[in-house]
Length: 189
Ligand code: AMP
Image 1: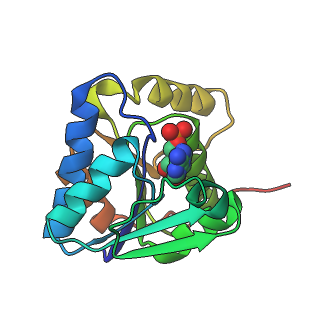
Image 2: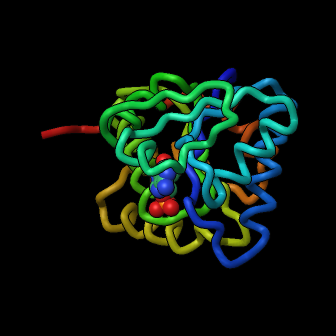
């Protein structure tokens, strides 16, 4: 895996462990020579993640819509900053640039990005792994909801199982390396 896109909170959350894990991920990616692709901001977990990757000598690419970039919250020290016109274009560009996706804890923005990527995976638009880092059980309620969608007949098990959920970064990276996309596409009518 050469490039990983990471989605995460533009806030830091209340538990310092969120920040610690964002920093650990930045470091791990740099140590493994994996380029970090992220939202480009110097705020919240995004700042912790990108700063730690840069400090560890990693390559970091930010992708920001002009709307946010013009507010002056772009990270000034990245290896590369790509400014796009819309939020939609940003997701497309981040998808083009990466071989896999990890979401750390976050809010609406993080969930939106992560679910778009897993939806595209379900439709076979891309074949990349999508993972949630379950820091201190942050994603437990979402995992419950995903189970519920499956038992209620809205989500096939084979598609549910595409989403990697783990509290351990090393395990996530290992599972992403091993990932093979399911061959069964979603039935559309
Ligand atoms: P949220 O989880 O709602 O904090 O949103 C975080 C995600 O949405 C990030 O992965 C970003 O891609 C995007 N996002 C939200 N706020 C910002 C911001 N201030 N600067 C850059 N991207 C942002």
